[in-house]
Amino acid sequence: MLSKLWIAFLASALLVPVHSAFAQATSTSSGQAFPGKVVRIVIPFSLGGSNDLTARILLPHLAERWKQQVIIEPHVGAASTVGATHVARSAPDGHTILFTSTQYAYAPSTFAKLPYDPLNDLVPVTLVTVSPQMVIAHPSLPVNNPKQLVAFARSHPGQLSMGNAGNALPTYSFITLAKIKMTTVPYKGAGPLNIDVMGGHVPLGMAAISSVMGTVKSGRAKAIGVCSLERTPLYPEAPPMAEAAPGFEAVAWFGMFVPRGTPPAVVKRIRDDIAEVVQVPDVRKRLNDIGGEPSGMPSEEFARMVRSEIEKWNNVAKAAGIKPQ
Image (cartoon, rainbow, N blue to C red):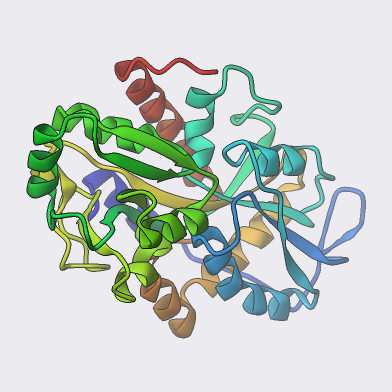
């Protein structure tokens, strides 16, 4: 289960009615209709990860509603900031949408200077899904649960390494709370991380359940634990990592942003349509199958959540002695 904070966020999203007139176009302040051309959803991570998989589930439904082609446009690099920068500098008309993850909240604690202002240059549209992160391991590693992992790490100080899909802050938080020594290995996305864990090039990996579910189900990696405070129905077999690192929680979220200046009517149109799409039974099932819990949170609530997440991970970085580079 997710923490009370996350449950409150999701509950508030479900209480807000959605009124999406998807058969009609929404006009921007310049008079241009939205959508009036191809809509580009910018993915700031390697293909094959949660963002890519989730976007591909949503795309055909959004294209049907918007009567326009909707395509995925990868802009990968610099821990998701290349994609965020591209969208921040795009025309504020709703036709270029950033679909990013918790990395958005990690970035201010990672980079001393960003080419965009995460609190002002991009407008939060909606939370699409949430997914607790999961620690996975190559089958050869002689541990099967959080307590065994921590015991092994303590008996082999500094010898274990854990790959991170995009950012090491959750791993640093786990290392600090578990009081162990471990090397972190950065990856540009969950796709290459999965490949290296399956191949035994890195013994451990941490990423959203939605990014590693397929790898675990294939038997080419095993689940050690989930990074929620309690077991999750998304993968009930895995115990919480908090059993060995009290208080540890790392929930991955996936949300959409548009450039500052995008007309409120367009922002509302995009949010409302996404909120309806993620509750379509087939879509909801497919998102659950890859480890995502659908949301569709109102824009204002999502904006507050983003600010809270940025503050949380900034505090984690300070506690771990990590200075932005």
